[in-house]
Length: 108
Image (cartoon, rainbow, N blue to C red; front, top):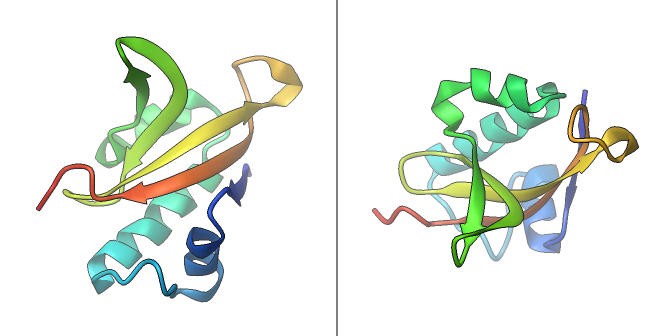
């Protein structure tokens, strides 16, 4: 099982306590957030992530170049953005997901 960490303390609070003063979200978005986090924890390789079609796992680009960030969908409007820390520095087995943002990227 892979580890999760958060760069945003309010997002970590949402994960640990189920609520946060910064993230006032509808119940279905919070439920999707927890489901996405559970799927990340269960995925030890990128292949596992591709297996969850509903996550729409993707590597993000910035200015046409790889940014080092990845994302998965929480629902039709929200996504989680994160970095991956690899075991032994090789892009094979995932050691940790460093979640940086829950954003309303897709509108709606």
